[in-house]
Image 1: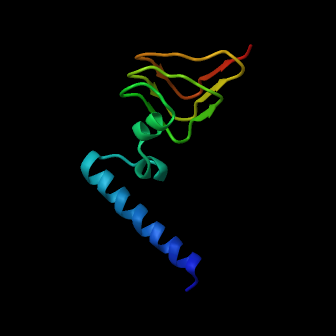
Image 2: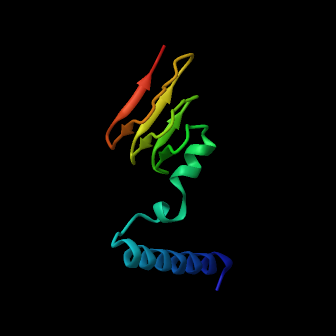
Image 3: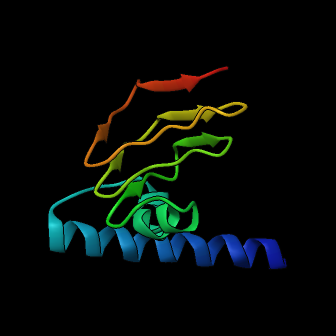
Length: 103
């Protein structure tokens, strides 16, 4: 078995364990990236406010600023160009919503 095959097999085993745990504990079936990555850690790494979260399949372009207690849902686009900045607090951005600010 090649190293790549071994890695793929390990990934599938990890996915199966995460999926089974999610179903057992929460009665949910989620995409693999939602079980692997932490939305709040990503928001923190982007400099977003306290208790904010952003899904890993959301896109962030430019120096976007997000305030505290803000939920950025899946399949969203936050984009800032030049000197404009997006600032939200206690907001909710849902799927199919794109926020684009252009100077």
